[in-house]
Length: 118
Image (tube, rainbow, N blue to C red):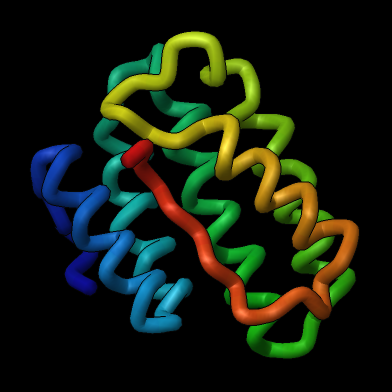
């Protein structure tokens, strides 16, 4: 992923989802991180949390359960406040639930995660 990645939010969500579906969570993290860095202040913690979920999944894939548990828990805490009025159709409640479940049971595979509500 280029360092200067810049795409509209809807496109970034689609790309991050594609990467997650292909079991490429680190690359999804890079897409989400680019959105986080460009997001308006009111949304920054949401995107930071989504990027952390992807990194948490990366740690799971690499066998670092301790790091995964810490990141997934922190990410869930960070994005949970957006649950009442999720921007961009992000499935905040579903992601929080899945991140917490993975933090409690990191052996739970495969890791399926939907970023947006159906």
